[in-house]
Length: 74
Image (cartoon, rainbow, N blue to C red; front, side, top):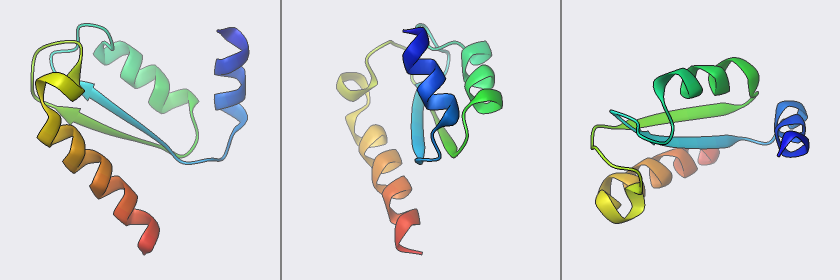
């Protein structure tokens, strides 16, 4: 796992972190750590409790992903 984090810290590739609020698995502290350590990171908060957003808030996850992908057309 450490090797994966090291790679993400070095990688200039755009990244998207979709997280819930309140976060069960990805806490607000973890989101802040990711923002501080990962270059080219976009975060999207979905106000929905739970730990598996694609099942619990699929429309919101789809909107976050499609909105993020549209930024590459600019």
